[in-house]
Image 1 (cartoon, each protein chain N blue to C red):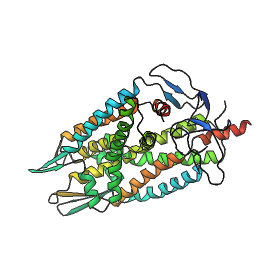
Image 2: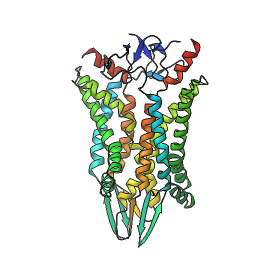
Image 3: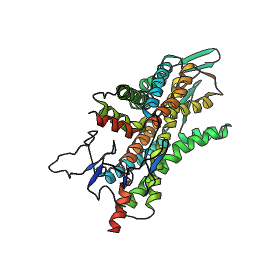
Length: 208
Length: 199
C-alpha cells in the first residue's frame, strides 16, 4: 500500500498519467507530459479554498430561502412565493410527490452538502484516521447530488417563459432565484476544490 | 509506465487486464480506476452525431404551448432565458444558457473534433486541449435537471391552463438519453492513449 506521493510521483488530474514530481522552484509550474494540464501533488490550497466557498454558500443560503423565488401577479393581486411556500403549495394541492422532490433538491440537499463539506474539512484538519473509506464515500455523494439543486432555478425559468400573458397572469423571477443559483454554483465549485486524497494522507502519516 | 494512481486516494496500482465491460476499482477506497468499454470510440461517435441532429430539432420547433381561454402562447427553448435577461437577471440567464445549452453542445462538438479524425487514424491538432475542456465541463451540463424542471412546471400550471408539449420537448427528452449514452460509452483512458501515440 503505497501512494503516488510517497513514490515521488504525481497523477495528472485530467488524463491520470503518472509522472515524476518535480517540486516547483522559483515560481515554475509543472505540466503533464501527455495532456499539458498543470500538475499539482494535491489540489492547491484545497482546505482554505473549500472553507471560503463553503462559508460563502452558507451565508447565501439564508436569503435564498427567505426571499421570494417567484412573484405572481394575477388580476391585480400579487403573490410572492419562497421555496418553502412552493413546497407547501404542492403538498396541500394534491401533488405531494412533486413537493417532496422540490424539498429534497432545494432545501435538504444543499444543507446536507454544506454539513458534509464542513465535517470533511474539520476531519482532514484534525488529521483524523477514522473510517477513511466512508468519508471518501461521503465526498462522492456531495459531488454527485449537488447539481440536482438547480431544479428550482430551472422551474422558475420555465414558469417565466410560459406565463408572460400580461392580461391574465404574469410570473416574474424573484431575488431569491439569484441567491439560490449562487448557492448551487458555489457549492459545486467547493466540492470540486476539495481534495479527497487529503483524507488518506493523514493515514499514511500515522503509519510512518 | 504500467502504473495508475487512484484519483481519490492516490494509491498506486499496477494496471490490471480486465474483460470488456468490467471496471477496475481501487483496493483501498473503492473508487473506479477505469472501465474497459467495448467499441468505445465508434459508439461514442455514433451517439454524438445522433445528439447533434436532436439538438438542431430541439432548437427549431415550439417547445411548450400554453392555451388559456383561447389565448395561445408558444415558447421556444430560449424564451425563458431571454425573459430572465430582460427582467434584469443577466447572470441567471447566462447560467441557464450555459448549463442547458452551451455546455452540452460544446461537449458534443469537442467529441466530434477529436473522434472523427481519430476514426481515420489521425489526430486533430488541438485534441488534447479540447478533450480536457470536455472533461472539465462535465459537472456543468444539466439538461436532465432542466427536463425534471419542465415536469414540475407542468404540474404547477396544470390547473391554470392547458399546456401542450411541442416537438422540441420530445427531441430534448431523447437528447438527454443519447448524450448520457454517448458520454458513458467513451473511455477517456483509451482516448488519451490514442492521442499519445500520434502527437
